[in-house]
Image (cartoon, rainbow, N blue to C red; front, side):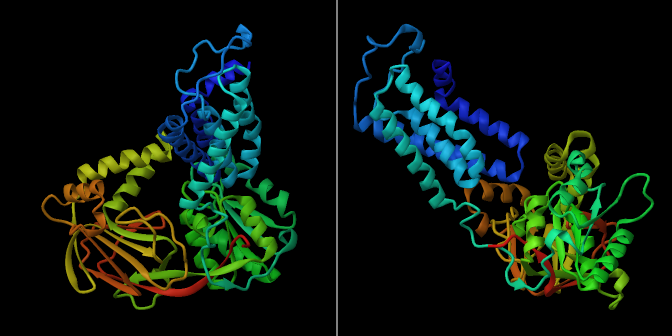
Amino acid sequence: MLPKLSRSADHGVLWFGLAAGAAVVGGRPVRRAALRGVASLAVASATVNTVAKSSVRRHRPLLDAVPVIRQLARQPFTTSFPSGHSASAVAFATGVALEKPAWGLALAPIAASVCFSRVYTGVHYPGDVLAGALLGAGAAFAVRGLVPTRAQLAPPARPRASAPALPGGEGLVVVANVGSGQRAAVRSDVAEQVRAVLPLAEVVECGSEDDGETLEDALTAAAGRAAELGGALGVFGGDGTVNAAAAVARRYGLPLAVLPGGTYNHFAYDLGIESVADACRAVETGEAVAVDLVRFRPADDGADADTTRHFLNTFSIGAYPELVRVRERWAPRVGAWPAGVLAAVHVLNSAKPVRLWVDGRERQLWMLFVGNCTYRGVGLAPVRRHDLADGVLDVRMVYGGRLARTRLLAAALTGALRHSPVLGTARARQLRISGIRPGTHLAYDGEVASAPHALTMAKENEGLVVYRLPE
């Protein structure tokens, strides 16, 4: 058994397999832990093979006293000190543990068995294994020093705000959009998930095929009920559903509890809410923050509430709305992520630049991107926001023109994207877009709509109170 386990760890195959399996069956936190484990393994392996083994040229132990049944079929030919298998095993398990302690604890017996197998099969001295294990643990902590774990990062979405603590969920009314996202199996038991932690919460489902109630109607009724109870509005769904809930919560002056239940859940993740359990914990503790909203409306419609919309994450005109439309058309057939890749290829081959005016200047653009608050990431790869209440719009434009897409791709590949003349960036508190041609679409928080001839957008600083995990 141990010789087979030892062989399975050759070249990190065992650990790469476990990481791949975790990425498939686990959620976002598990995938992040698996990636950290692989990165730690890579650092440990590189250190062992490039520095450690060449510095101490120790011969392998003699196999005279090792029974044949315990020996490996193929003997290693490298030097003995330190044990690369032990370094990789401990690096992977420690890296995972730094991100997800429970998963790291589950991996510890496997890592320990691999380490012991190297002595059991006679290919290493105990000191080789001990040195390799120490080196592997050091590699995992070195990776953490370069890329902090979630627990080390400053909590996003400042500043703090006042929201009621709801022990047992008393006063919380959750609207579950069962038509949101792609994870039907998760959606189907959302009521059970919430009630298991918050037995006093009320859960209302909408969006099923035989349900005539609209999402807006369900949210309005739930908000009225939550206001009567002096509690909070909760929402289970993707970013589009959360967008609709935010408008209703703002109108009723209620704090919002976001339970991630869509395909991407960008807003929930920026809050540090990665599961229904996270959201439930936040509601019970009453930990909350104020976040910015961005209001946009047709420029010639005055303050008509029926035409005013908001976004929490991003707004765009140009290639991205078309990408969203294609992705949503293909997702039910091939899945969300493959549909996104196929849609990106389609848009790159077929998209045309749009001509419009941005703050009084005429532009020909492949895409106009506006983020609610400043996104990390250079160019058109916004990753995450540290602060959801910084008071600014993150504006990014990809200019049209000769070979614009080719030049943008070349800049990305060479690491010069930040300085590319094809890409323009700015920070603003408000924005006016005009001269939009009929038939142009816009996208906001993953939803696609027809664009008016002109529109204005402005920040509503700290316009919404949302629950988040305590520090």
